[in-house]
Image 1 (cartoon, chains in turn red, cyan):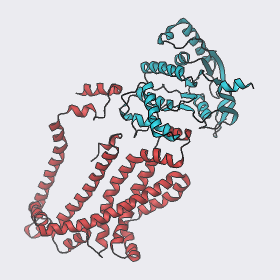
Image 2 (image 1 turned 90 degrees about the vertical axis):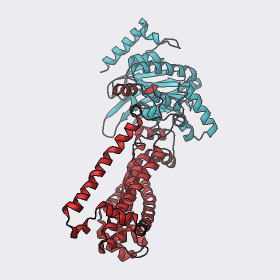
Image 3 (image 1 turned 45 degrees about the vertical axis):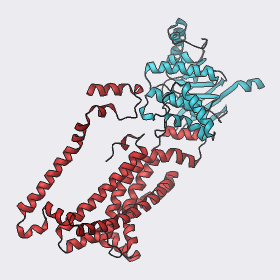
Image 4 (image 1 turned 180 degrees about the vertical axis):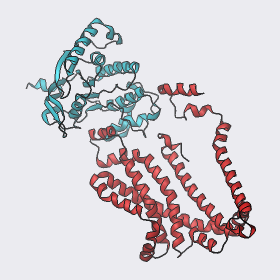
Length: 292
Length: 249
């Protein structure tokens, strides 16, 4: 099998392949699937076993509320529709906050990165402040945000933006600067305008980096929405408020269910952007198909 | 200067000197002309400023002394790397210059398809660069430049990175394109055999700062067969070029 894949590599000219590389195709389908699914499955089982061990082995009955065993979390947090719908509802509210924040971050981030890519001076001027913005511990700025903007939806969105903006700017800027010098020379040679160069060279070349940034920021925006919601209670409660309430009322099962669902939201958003990336650039860029 | 002389001169270097801001002198008093229908090759040791000469001809670099005269409107320039845009198919890559020069869509598509056929890439129009071999990428790069029908064609060691067999093929094909299109060609290489095989004239450049130290007319008729490389006359001329090259160090 190894030799065959080697042969294929040595004569790429004879390989008109849009299809995946030979090495992948040679593996049987079921085996390939098993190799992908089995390792996380095994680790998952181990994790649940450990969980049971702590719930029943380590904790006495009176203190078991600290970590309810998995089946109880399932019964109370997920299988009970009243509880689960409450979690879903607040999760949805936070999802909307996260997505609004992300969209604003994307627009703002693209704009700033594009400007910085046009002149070294602008990059030097703006970039340090972006780093400072990124370095602010979000907890330190929360009182200031509530002081200025109140504790409503806008403040939650603002936290999202502050958290998710930086990776978009950095990756977009890096991407815009990644086009090879030779290709820039081509555009210079044929009298391309600034706009044309940006549209036909710099932005397409930046796409892989932009998507890398988007996937990071999408995850961060979810965290931002939850953290923001944790501190800002006005308006429709999100998952952060819900978590706080469950913790205060010692509703351990719901608390764990809410944590699991928050994580699931982050993972979904990450996968969603991976999928969009494959659709957008998978045909020409290798990492596009290697996502998730 | 007689009018007929102006008409045939496609590219003229006049006492070109180039000193980079860091003080490196790349070129020193380089003067020569390339007429229409001429294929001139410059051979020289690596780092002697050969590529700098092409950058100056195309306007990518500004020379510090002397003057160049050339029509830069539709200059053809093939780089060492294929410099294809990874996100475009072969066809869309070849169409790029047409886009940059605002040639209407239907026409540039036609020009692109013609050029692709000319370099032997038909059937690969919808392939992305990542699935092409080095030689095929170079062909696509050639095709892209051909769409402009450039009267002046600059080649910067375009076949340096491909294997020997592919290189010989590409030499032959470039020679055929030259015959067909009748452009003024200026080719940079450090392969003597490549230089003698393709050109009407070979110039030898010295070590940095680059100067033209020898000039050879290549008398062989076009089309030249690959077997020409084993002709005694070819060997003799190559020997002379090689001798001049060694003397230039």
